[in-house]
Amino acid sequence: MNKKPSSIKSLKNSIRFTQYSLFLLLIIFTGLITRFYFFPFEVPITSDALNYFWFSSDIYQIGKLPSDWSLGNNGWPIILSAVFFITDSKDVLSLMETQKIFSVLISILTVIPVYFLCKKFVQRKFALIGATIIAFDPRLMVNSFLGITDPLFLLLTSTSLVLFLYSNKKNVYLCFVIVGFASLIRTEGMAIFFVLSIMFFIKYRKENYKLIFKYLLILGIFILVLLPLSAYRIDVTGNDYLFQRGLRHVDQISSNEGFYDKAIDGLEIFSKYLIWVLIPNFIIFIPLGIFLIFRKLNINKITIILSLAILSLPALYGYTLSALDTRYLYVLFPMFCVLTVLPIEKFSLKFSKQNLIIIGIIVAIFVSSISVYDYLKIDYEHEKEAFEIMKDIAGLAIGINELDNEVRYIPTVYTINQWPTTYKNLDFKTVIIKFEKGKSLQEFIIESKEKGLSHIIIDDKNNRPTFMQEIFFEEEKYNFLEKVYDSKKHGFDYHVKVFKIDYSLIN
Image 1: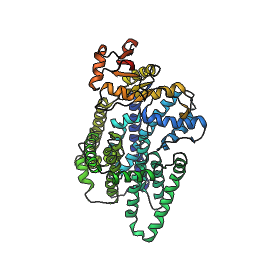
Image 2: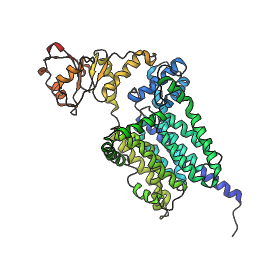
Image 3: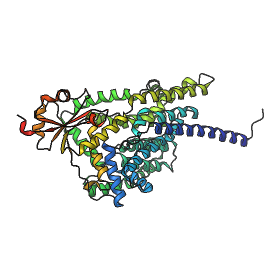
């Protein structure tokens, strides 16, 4: 037989690469279009995202890092401030929108490292399935709209894993630079540093004494990445929020007598949330994927296994502290993609029409993801109304009770009304007072008087405390409460009532 000329082989490989590149670009483009189709325009940021906005906005306004306050994880808002400088908008709502849009763009870029991560374990056409899962995962989609740290953290951690698996002796240092930046975004980046450190010693174990010197160089590079912002945090707050934070957590564990019981509860929450986040795209294939990852172990498979184990620990610790949020598990998604594509490839290779199977799976992933997104998505029309209602309430009340998620728009209202003003100079005139379970209405009001409680805010949701529901539907029973606001009279579908407290009538 005549062998094909090497130039023809090279051209064929080049065309094949171009085809897969086009498919990957198509996935990214479709994922981006899907995100912007569901994007919550006109809904301002709140909670953690608002904290990051304050820090970014301060840098944008004064042209340097604030000298009187700092966040623990300030890597994301520093990068975000650079985007603010580029856009150079003078409208606060536009800047908040920019924060969310930038988060969306970073989120979709995670498709690229996840594709290359999967490609280390399966053929390229099956790696496209892993990329599709990340592109359309409903939880990552919702999370990308918030403007918080998770998309950038996930991009950096998955990129560092890819660089490590594809690296040689010379460029392995780059992945630890990326890990350093991930640790500045979120403290949990230290976990991936430990993973790659262990794997570095395993991967290059045959180098004997040279290994120690190379690792010391890696450690030095890692510390140099962390040092500037760590020094800044210590100078401003007295805490580096990295090593000191880790030591504080260790001290809490060792000194907490009831930590064992909390750990059991945390493990139960972790298990429930883990099963929940596997739905819809991971749940079918991961059990078989776990079996396959342990077969014929090599350095790549050990890296995935160790990453899953160690990166689960921060989430488990968070759940022991009752931090009830699935977002702590998102860092595991790239490894979940690997566990998913392994059995898909093994199953598909038994059939001749593999491309049709892959296309069918990709379509199924898209349909199931959009279906679950429809279930998980935030009611953005409700959020818009809640924001507008809180604008009205902020002008009425000095102090109000907490009302689940809706009152989180109060600080946002004051930020928008007073911008451009640096965070320390913002005047938050309305105090939000948390209601403790087991307290009666009168106990809560009397105990909260010194805290500044002036009004009671309630809505028609049936998950509120019983006395709140009674006030809402039988307001005439409470002579010490005077209704001063009713959202229905202002044309809103979301029904909120505000009552002014007359302390002279409370017995």
